[in-house]
Image 1 (cartoon, helix red, strand yellow):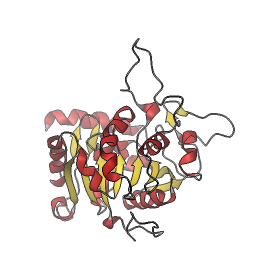
Image 2: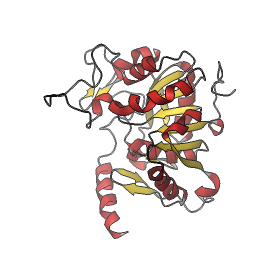
Image 3: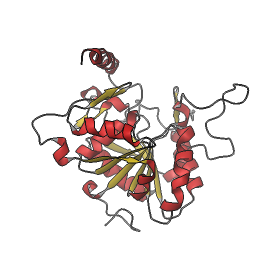
Length: 289
């Protein structure tokens, strides 16, 4: 059954999904775009500057990967058909995200609603699926107050989780929401599967509405990771938000810390330390290309 229907089969064929990353030219957006395209999904990298997205897409479709700043998608193997012949990957403007089945919120949190809000009238009532990647308390570029003071990422009167914040403001009972990929280093997501630096820690934590969780579960499995589904729906999302110090909610009843629970969750500090060496070597290698 099509993912925008009222029900969804337990097993989702990801090859039937059209996925738009909004905005998809950042670290997680680029790495996930390549992984999802390699898994057979119809993927659109959406940006306010389509030419920037097109440059990324052209590099990925050439098989050479894409490496700039902290984005480090490696070249794809040469013993398979050229990606351009098999990947359904394209660049698009932000407005084109409204046509996809699955919309991935990939902008920094403090600008995400400003990006999504103008598109909402075209999306409401159409059963869209949203995957929220935004990390309010790991956002280092959030604006300051008028006196330079640090402002709370989410106002105290709002739901203290990005997926609840966006879902509440979007205000559409036909849509389905989940949050995922909060603990995963983007560099661990390669087009053909997990970076070997993951070791055995291949879990991706997710939670949310059942239909969105079913779709996101299939998308996670499709590029070689293991979904770790937290019960309770979007309502429990505040318990699973993280900061640089781990879970924001502390105490004996708080969820297990990333990287310490027994179900294979990848935490931001639990990948092999050699991932940092890989990053330094990749940045150094750019000077000789």
